[in-house]
Length: 512
Image 1 (tube, rainbow, N blue to C red):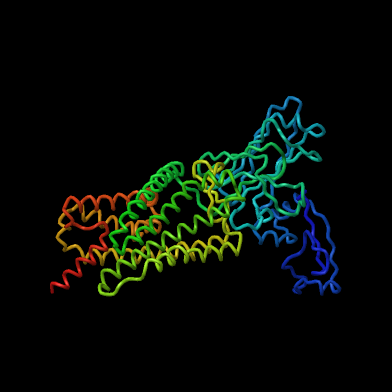
Image 2 (cartoon, one colour):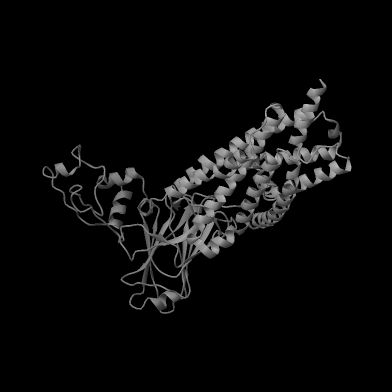
């Protein structure tokens, strides 16, 4: 990395690991291993990189391997900082076959001359081969361009006026400026954000403001993608969760009073209201808890939030199954309420316990806004790793897919069964019944699978509104249907459409 190239040969796994070595090479068609070192002699000779690149550009056979690799050589620019140095711009030379838009510009501030006490020559080296600088993390990718800025034999840090490095690149969203920390093992890639500030000036240009000298580049984060309109979505979600918590508490009180009617659907509606209240309360507080407690609190809160979500989905599934039972198995009594409680509250805890035992699943999650990647929103949820991603798909997404598909089917079947009823002539009753069943059966969560394409922003806002205010809509539905029933003298649809449907079908079969 100090403008010279060398070779070395490792003698096998029992020897100290070679920092630099020959990989996938041959000598007279014999593949190079530690066993053939007795047949051939190897000698490492340092070669100046500038000389090597000159030989490559002239087509020398000595560097034909480098030519085949198609890795452009680095280009260096040397500048002498005179006494009246007032700053200088340096632009990377255009490489053959590389677009002119992917250039790098460096601004050297006047403060660099003051900080460089012993030397006055600064060297800017522009690399187009980033294979040496990849750190092996799949979540991040190093930009094609890497810049090294040095003043020979001097360590320069804490510049009052930062160096500005502008990177032109393709369209990218989530990116951050980093520098290579060479204080540890220089052969180990260790990119840090310390000392660098990121300024995104459009999707195709990033400017890095750094107060020290070393290697600089831009890390492009592949996952997760940045969220558009995060501030507005967060405000809607917070308001919706707060309203839903209050609504669910009111609905719980209402349903507890209705338990005297001995309607079989009441305990199930009550279980759903309790789980939704817990889910909305945790989601409302998750941002505050993540910022205050961090990793000490978030594993517990993330696990609790995941449990509340799975419990809510389970109770919605119970609503689907119970409705099917009431509509199509009229003369067979449904299971007792304690069975539903075991399924709705105990069963979702099993995958949470397993995931918590596996470890490294729950913790602080960063949700990055597209307009300010340096200021992510923190929440307690699943971490950003492969284990957490698998856990999310095998638990949350799988249960959600089953819930939405069964909910849509059941909603159609129930509608077909009760649309001929006399009270359905009142449009408001029909609307409230279908809307309430849609919430009960979890079909509004199906919008999660439609977050793509040109309508993704609209779908995201619609999903955010419907699901965060779900507790409020359910409370409104129950109260309105009860009010309509009282206004109609008890002839209209009861407080729960499923229970009334069962009663209506029993009366019809008795008449027949």
